[in-house]
Image 1 (tube, one colour):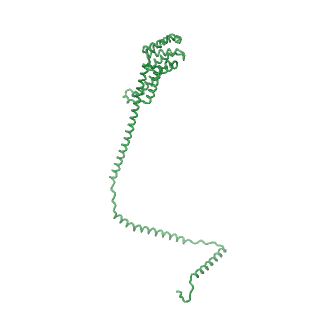
Image 2 (image 1 turned 60 degrees about the vertical axis):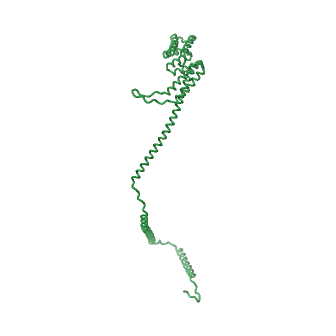
Length: 315
C-alpha cells in the first residue's frame, strides 16, 4: 500500500469529528463524506471515491477541506486513477505541508508504475490473429520515470525518516533504476556488436562480388581467340614493302602540288594586263627615269670590262 490505510482512515475520521464547522451544510453530503471515509477504511476505494467526490462538489470552490482532498487522493490511487490521485495529493500538500509525505509517496509510486510499463510494453496484436512479437522496452522513457520516482521517494524518506514503507518504496525504485541501467548497457553493447557484424558482412559481400566479377572477366578472356604471336621476319618484310609504296605516294603528291602551282601561274599569265591611265606629265617623268636607268646601267658595265694593257693578250 502507498500509505498506511488503517492509520490514515482513522486520522480522517478523527478530523471529521473536530471539523463540524466546515462540514457540508446538507446532511446527505455529510453522510457521503462519512460513508466515503468508512468505505476507504474497509478497502472499497471505488465506492469511497464516488461518495467523496459527491461530498467535494458540495463545497464552494477553494473551500474543500484539506483532509477531504487527502482522502480523495487515497481513494483515487487505490481505484487505479493515478492522475486524479496526484492532483488531489498536490492540492492537499499545497494547502498543508503535513500532506507532503502523501504527495511524494503517490507521485513516486505513479512514476514507478510508468517506468515499469515502459520496461514491459504490451504485445501488439489484432483480435483473432496471433500477437506480434513483444516490442522492445523504451529505455529513455523508463529512465525518465524512474528518476522522478526515486526523487519523490527520497523526499518522502526525508519527511519521515523512520517510515519503513517509505524506505521500501525507495529501495524498489533504486532496484528498478539499476535494472534499467544494466539493460541500457546491454543494448549499447548489442548495438556495437551488430554494427561490427554488419560492417564485416558488407566487407564479405564486397569481396564475394569482386571474386564474381574477376571470374566473369577470366571467362571472357578465355573465350576470346588468342592473339597472333609477333613474327620479326614478316614485320621486316612488310616494312621493306611499305617503303617503296610510301616513296611513290610522296612523289605522286609532289607532282600534284607542282602541277597545281603551274596551273596557277599559267592562269595568272593569261590574265591581260590592265592599262595604266597616266597623265602626260607622268609619262614624261617615267620616260626620263627610264633613260636615266639605261645610262647608269651602261656606266656600270663599262666599269666591269677590264682595260687593255700593252704587251698583254686579252684572252
